[in-house]
Image (cartoon, rainbow, N blue to C red; front, side, top):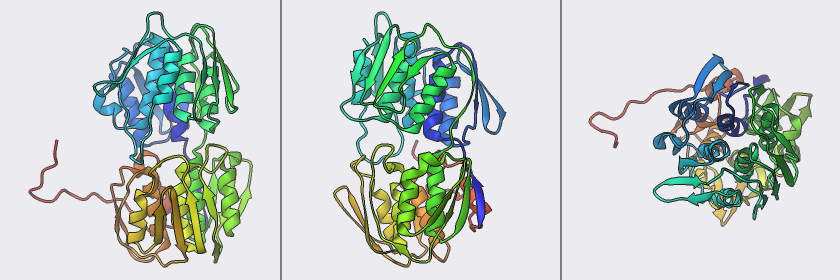
Length: 417
């Protein structure tokens, strides 16, 4: 029995941070997660001339009045996927942009073709040679009607940011509906933008001449919350998860109830109690409000406890299964066929040296480590820290025996530059 506080949503904070580039004024951002992706994003903006102050652990003041366009540092930008939101922000404010191709977790091809389609529809000339994405235009971004070929979160956000101050009215059709898109629209509207329809298939952006500063709180992290919910069920524990929006968690809640866990909802919290015997289930990842792809690896780890064969159909990314080898190293019985992962259970997991293959795969092996006896060593935890604020401290608060240690490089071995 225990409780844990969920931090602000990384996937909402990143586009909002870069959208600050549109604003020639001071902005105060609250409920910011203390994670490496956020730190890196602030480093990028500081390098471009932004003034950023930490007011407390979760609150920052951001002033992008004097940012210099097309000046982001390549080595910083390539560390994280969310840096591509700088494209829309620079294009929207300056009518041009030059940003290195983004980085992030490696689990298959994640093209930016829909971003480019949107920028071109708005009058941008896009070049993607030499490791950079460059956008140029004679008179800045123009309003347009854009239909995305697929529902894409990143492109929806990027075009919405670019269109906030573009002359005329821009329509985004087949828009993604995720909560962080609504959050970014709400932020921009708090700065004086005129955006309607966020969270639906069609978003309408009436361009305004300029934006002003505001104070804005980031929504809670639904993936962090879901990870703690799954961890509670996986360990047959009982955990109250605070600072959440229960509606954002409905697809996760439904699956946990299906396998036998008890989930009680409150205004801003959920309480998950695991069960002794877990039933098998099937999961298909889908765009919101479907089951999130970012919860796929965690569910796989949990389903090692379920009786029978469960399966997860990954419909978003081509290859999100690198973590499976690590779980099998711990004694799991998992196989992958195409985009489907099959989990045979129940199986007794055992401690083993494993690695975090990516952000969500890393938290999956951490959940698996909580499920088995013995001491598990997880390396490459920097990938986990990209998206989970004080994960070791929060798990210790729930009774886990976990600590972060620094391992020196072997004597005589030099790292490549």
